[in-house]
Image (cartoon, rainbow, N blue to C red; front, side):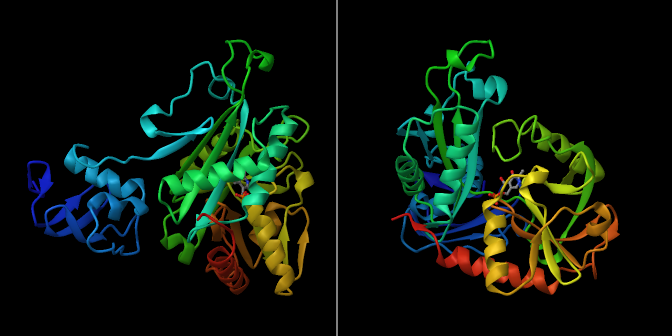
Length: 373
Ligand SMILES: Cc1ncc(COP(=O)(O)O)c(C=O)c1O
């Protein structure tokens, strides 16, 4: 036992809490008053987090999200402090336990719905308008009526972040067709269901943002736009999941999907850029890709920085012989790629153009966005 507890209160002790994949050190001076909490795990929380003094454990830990609570939960068996996360469900913020979806929801039965992944940095939601617009465009394309205006959706997103006391967050907005019967017919689903979750996400281990990622191109082709247009950010991600399974089996963290004609399209959850012969190149949307919000930011930065760029199809050969490569996405942010299909890209280290773009991107995420307050 690492902790001591009497009558529901913590005794003043110093403890190391071992979690499933790391550890948290809680330093108490007075009962139920945390002086400092330090994440020891390098794997998931490379930064050392120091919490404000004098708060209760819940107040101090909540901003750091669920993972920290997991450790506490393991330890306390959820007796004293709970995650207490609030989920937006159809107009109400409810505790996580109450945020349940019907098994007759067509989002569950058929992947019939749309979604967004959004990030907030430092109390500001990055590119909120762009994400909301893409959500509404996706919904329009599949004839799904979102029962809110864009402004109401923005408000709901901000309220959810606020209710969870988060400054840095990954927000998932899911709009499903709603509850129907076991048939496909969407007319049986009377109302769309809107869920917003504010949490954290770590797509790739932190050190790979410095060292770069290995990827493979996979046999699973990107959805053809005349079957299911990849521009629709639908709940049907099976195409991407099949590609991800191939990456897993190849022992790398990301897969690149190719079009029917043999051009590189995108990763399973990110867009791709190469730098080749002095030019930044990214596949054009007509090839069949999700038009990434982050991708658009990179193109804006390239323009500002006078980095020549082009939206143009490129092949695996172009990728293998590129000087630099990186992936972009809301969850992934910008991550260098140093090897594809066992071909070393450029020098095998993240290149200078990638480094410059990452720096400029981080400057933007830390200074721009819609305030949560
Ligand atoms: C298939 C796919 N491509 C690209 C992206 C990157 O898009 P964004 O930058 O808008 O997150 C995503 C992210 O969700 C994705 O799922």
